Image 1 (tube, helix red, strand yellow):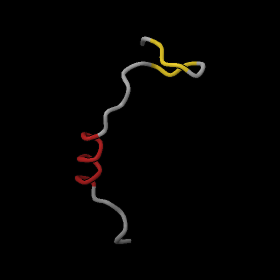
Image 2: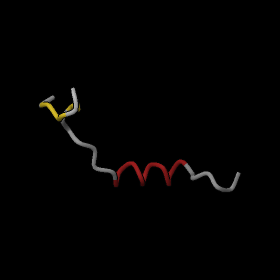
Image 3: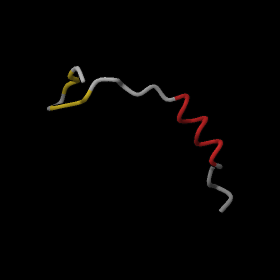
Image 4: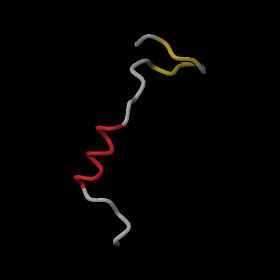
Length: 32
């Protein structure tokens, strides 16, 4: 399965993602 990424590659992707820090409730972001 050469199309799968390695653990290190997934970690690098995870570090580059910027997730919202607020909770998404009822179609809008709420303070968490």
